[in-house]
Length: 448
Image (spheres, rainbow, N blue to C red):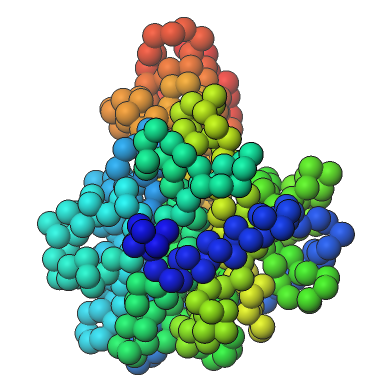
């Protein structure tokens, strides 16, 4: 890592993770070691704050390292058009610029990976030069060695790049410290950092949440929502029995015998949105106390050195989650926020909902217009990849404002002349594309 130019903070963070692996730790968080949370404080949205001085002490950081390979993308997912021809990055940048109108506003950072940096730099240089160059807004994610599963030595690969992997978004803390960006932010007068995923357009900087966090004096605040059926596999919040601190448990950290309890949304009620608020002064103190790193639970991700070749040598990727830092800070808190602050796009199902009239674009914020978010299940064989998805909706996006559930099986062509209401299933049993005729479809099954 030293030879690759990694910072001391990145090396310290990897060392912690590797030593945990060498000690034989499993990274598992068994059910008997935690307590479920019966309730948490609730945030009630209201009028925007007029506290400009507090806003100027905040910095927005968006995680922008993903390529969206699960959707067939080969560039930064944040460059995907999501609404009215605007990309995730368009809406993010416009939000920052709006907050900066009328005086000093928040700082702005994008945490890029080496695979998204070039695309992102070119996009911002062309469309948002007023935000400055990459030296102003870019924070590069570190990379870590893959570990040979048999020998625990650094993995070897025919392609040297394949011997490295991203260390998870828990790398945020080492990247801030090792790049000098944390010290720079503090020198510029920034006190509070709001972190969220670039593909979550619900995660705008809420001035009232900022006021709440600043007034609390807490070092760390996690936004959570009530879990739904769709969140059974997502990380949930709990309390550690031994320390009494809040703790995040991801499904990869749950032993097989506890999977049923993990998926019980009536027991483990609160889901991590990955919207985090961090006091930069207290983060600096924690990093200094930890000799440049935060002690985060390690996730041992078992893969092959060439992810496209299951016969290639087995490796372990040592990863951490940034939300797991909630257990590293004494006095860390969590708050329940409306579901509208969690609108991630992980699949084309999510993308269809946002592109439809179920959501309206108000300034740079998406607002839910439907009574409830429609549950969408598109046939993965025909809609999973973005090129296939766009082809099926080339004639327009159907109305989903009154749709509760949409299930599609087979290659169906949609248009803006289609209005779906209630629960609708559309099936095309043939291999050839078949159009769904324009019109209203309410609570019915349609076979083409």
